[in-house]
Amino acid sequence: METMTERRVNGLDVEALAEVIREIEKDPAKGQVEFRVRSEWKGQTRSRSSVESYTIGGQEVHRHFTIDADEPFELLGRNTAPNPQELLMTALNACITVGYVAGAAVKGITLEKVEIETSGQLDLRGFLGIDAAVRPGYETIRYVVRLKGNGTAEQFRQIHETVMKTSPNYFNISRPVRIDAQLVIE
Image 1 (cartoon, rainbow, N blue to C red):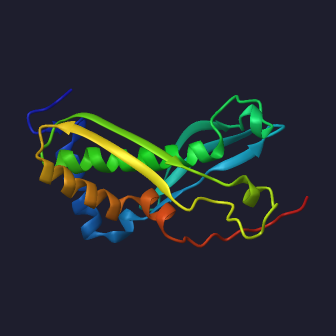
Image 2: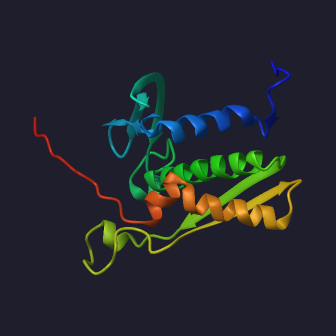
């Protein structure tokens, strides 16, 4: 239920967002967030990832979600779920969607539409180890975002620039991030 002091734009409580920002500015430790995912092989090319909790500002928050992944038939899967590459793009799209929606809300812009189409082309010779000169990942990931709302073209360009500067997943995909991999043999 909306109160007299609550102002929602695009479904977001703008004052609550401003309060989160103020709290983190006062105490940067409140802005430290750790996310965790556990993945298990479920046969053939299928896996199931579980989210049980995350930590924000030193406090653990419990929640439960499962996310399945599989490969299409042509890549020896059963085609029961999106493949890891599609989930990577989904994670990018979901993260930048939050940025566009929140960025517009802060500016008082009501959105009618946020639609993002993302694509990338892989050369399977890299993944399959056929040619060491071929990268196993993307050279380029492309996305097109379509925004519709009561903002000006300049406001939407500003929001777009801000999203590309502040989105965690945009950052993680567009720049090298160190991965600390450990092997445990049982």
